[in-house]
Length: 116
Image (cartoon, rainbow, N blue to C red; front, side):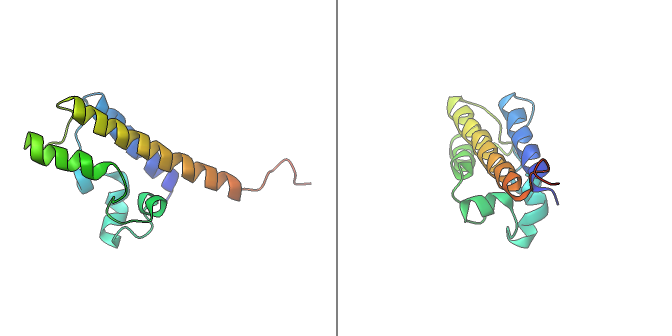
């Protein structure tokens, strides 16, 4: 499975949420969770980046608990300025994970110009 594509889909999910065109369904619509959640996050690019399972060490718990405690909505969307802040933090964190994957992949690929 291409982890870079998965993380690009994660960034797109949070972009849609910030644009008011999407909602967060947690593990049901998280691109990495669709693949890795049932594997207890083994191989998940987010878990590999943080060293923790189930999105611990990410901005996600703040986003989730803010909705549970302040909005009591099943659909987690941007309802207030704090929602926007937390969604932006999640989007930016997904970009960090994506960039880390891209950098690591770039270091592993040989430079084709140096090959005879």
